[in-house]
Image (cartoon, rainbow, N blue to C red; front, side, top):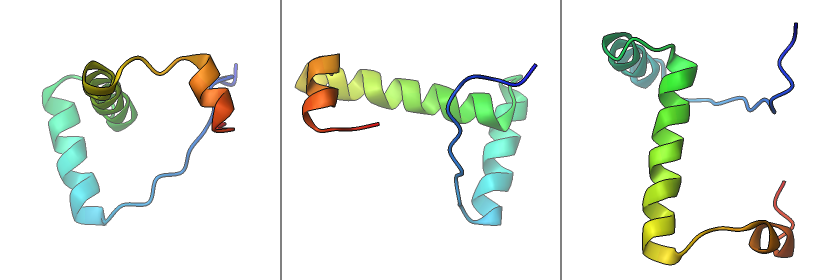
Length: 64
């Protein structure tokens, strides 16, 4: 069954992707899940510094 999650194509240098895959394997994750965890941590850090990003803020910037 196909995922209903949004898709995003990420273009990064091969050497960086290889390093990411290495780290992901050490963490027992796929490269995709490793990227997801990095994004989650980044958003959490941003929100700690700048406040929670709620739907009203997202919609006011027309982000989607």
